[in-house]
Length: 456
Image 1 (cartoon, rainbow, N blue to C red):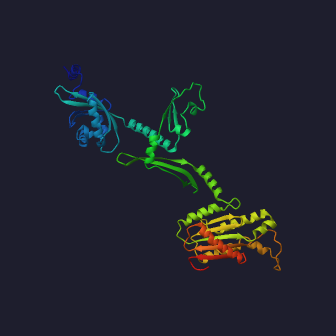
Image 2: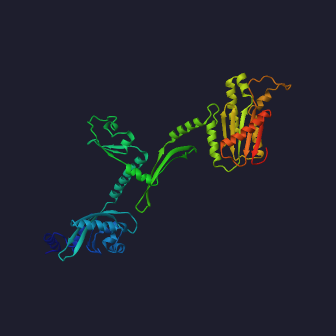
Image 3: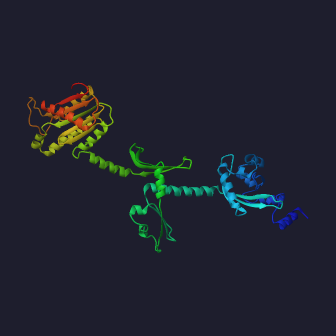
């Protein structure tokens, strides 16, 4: 009898090929996937491995494999998966001779390889228990499934963050899944007409709607590190692009962050509209500078935090009623607009320039204390934008002739606090008293008083 005939007889008699047979080993090596056998005891020592198994571990020789795994099954399993895999195998073997588990291989190079392990528990004629195992590389399948799971989790998180309602309709069955608080948002249960608003086919459409509440997820997001605010980032030209930043950090059982999910919502157009509305509400309709309410709010906000000196100047147009009576209200409006433009251009961008009402204006400068700079600024303001026009209105003999357009003077009452007061009212009352003194002294001039810093 030849060697091959003896192997064939063994197969017929025993139903399996002995590992000692060269034919059987060649046969096993041709089966795709990793094949191995190990003792079903605490040591789990291997006594057969296929070439494909060595390849899965990145090993060229059996000696390299033994050095890496200790020639044991548990040495093959990634350390982080061992406890779980042992528990799953023990549980399955209690009910059946087969088990099926998934785990990562314990590769020395750190390459991630996921495998499906299909094993059978067998006791041979000598009473020795073995596990016969087939491994299939399922890395791509596992990673693909995890990507889907992450995408689903990401969708749920973003839906909960935005209070949106997301729906998914299966046309063939009409099965419809709705994610989000539909009833809380619309005050009723969802109906078919909420989701089928434009027919795109002629098939009958009957939906079976199932809602998935995200209330528990919303609570967990609120309890976690939820961040939600508006901010901007510059574009290529340096102009701000507004967006809403929303993110949440997810934590594991050990309170360590394992995932950060968020989104950048496009709120640029909305922010521009709100900015325009806010600007319109803060601005004087005639002159475009701050109105009284906006000026008071900004000054009070600054006074609540500033530690520096500050100056408030109140400005009145001298004999403004005479302008309206003799030149008409359109000319009066022109004077106010031109004066407002002059005041705004004369001051810093951060200073508050406002029309308090009628012909009364105010300038607030945080950080502007007593000294030459303050006197120079007030002197410049007192000349007004109409100074050159008043000079042109004089005849060559020095006698005035009736001006074509009004060119009024102004009176300024300024108060400089070395130590900032607490409120706008206190600041305003002091400046108003100084303005009265300027008008009483003949108008067309400025008066300055310094509080807590000496006499004017």
